Length: 172
Image (cartoon, rainbow, N blue to C red; front, side):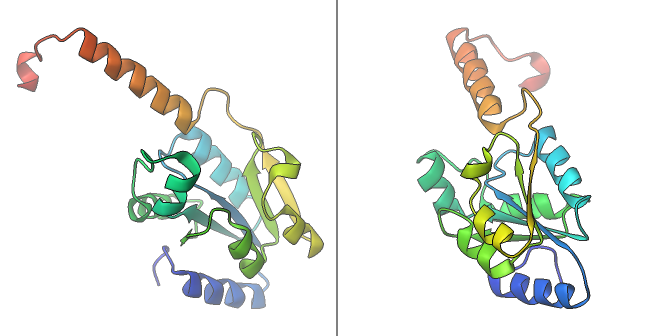
């Protein structure tokens, strides 16, 4: 069994793991450009249980949430990248605008989000806490965000087009 699973397969896997007494930790997001902030959240999330499940927004979902120019990287590629990271046990893709439905289906013991989300803004918090689970906010790492990376790329690329210089010889 791979680490990138369909919705049906992730539900079967989680059910089996819970029957064996494993604590399921869940987090979600777009994960468009993986950066050190993501890595640190994933590492800390994994420390909170036995199995870390990461659910990512589908491409259509990202477009609806972030705009027509997004996602930068396809869901298939994002899932593969995330699945290759040591703390991540399983990755699945959800098509809805929010992860509420998949959270209610997986019924994680721990729901993790970055600390830039207010506790009342965390989708699925009520579902997890109603079942006796807990919600953990992991403080963000200042200066590390996908939006910041994209802003820097846009600034730098605008600068490059304003001052067209010939490419260095080794780049031609």
